[in-house]
Image (cartoon, rainbow, N blue to C red; front, side):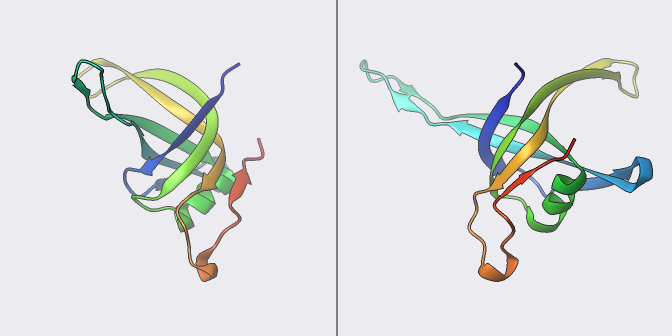
Length: 123
């Protein structure tokens, strides 16, 4: 089973581009943080932040384009995917991405801009 569940903060405003037949594709970084702690011997373990590349398609991408901004807290469910490519210098690069199929907006919104809190992507 390939299932990822994340709660984190959006690192920058989503970028949306349109591909085949004007299908929207959104991408943005999401930061998740594990809180630090103190060991019994007094050693402090600092917070650990991980950055995830989130990819959304179709209606989720449209919702993200309209309502999600840098700093917003989101719950994301999806699949983890890895790919490789060659950069401009001919170096092989590897990327791991989360292909989201569900999203819940956790940042409070005013009534006038409220969107349905949970959305699923129709694949």
